Length: 301
Image 1 (cartoon, helix red, strand yellow):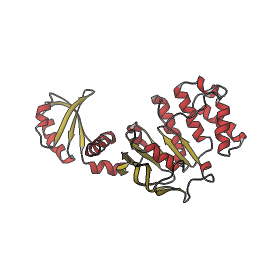
Image 2: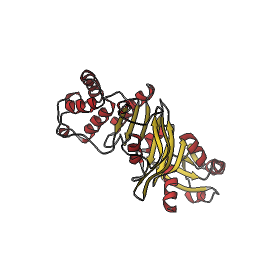
Image 3: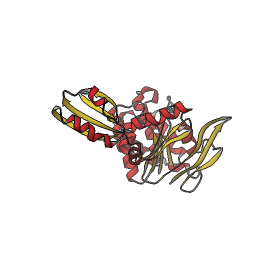
Image 4: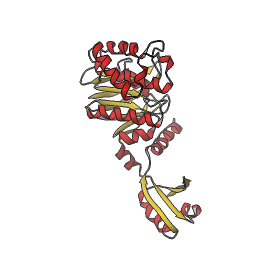
């Protein structure tokens, strides 16, 4: 289990992370979100033992990250850290042997992952000859080459198309099924919502949202109603108490309401329309909650 307890990290007088606490259990995928400069990468570097907190501590399976435990960890940083003049194979020898993986296992695992990511012909190519997307695949493989039990992934989907994002998600889920502890950040919040149960959202180093996504969405209370019907009058809907906004998106009206209770009043109006083809009441998306909470905190600062 990964434990982050009361972590505060300062650069001089600047507080990069302020009293951060959470834990991630084996077999769990945990999301760490925030705007640029919120403290995500600093948190990851602290987890890896590259930075030391001013207060608090980070432990993995009860111990501080050290030379004895780092072999169990796979870390994919946001900035590409590949040695571009090396071949893919030589680079994996380098990264693998740093984690005490035998040459035989490195070659076997490399062949497997190159095949899995549809780049098996790139084994002897230099990194600089690869596209940005394929370089991202190599960086991901470098985090997996030691078959880690803790995966720390900082923006793993950067530069990938939809098909390759889903391939990465599939691999992450496989490590989850094997009991790995996984923590990651992503600007693509829809993916966080689709396969994370819990998360922390940071803004200026402070926790602004924390907990199970289902509870966060429930506590937010605001809902969206999606409507497809003829002759809908936006002004009529806006006059209903509790309706905050009405927008049209892809031929579908989205009615934003303050709470689920307002849905009955909206339905009373919608059922007077012609040719009603859709009326769905949904919780606010994680993206909407993120914008509402982070925006509010930012304005208060």
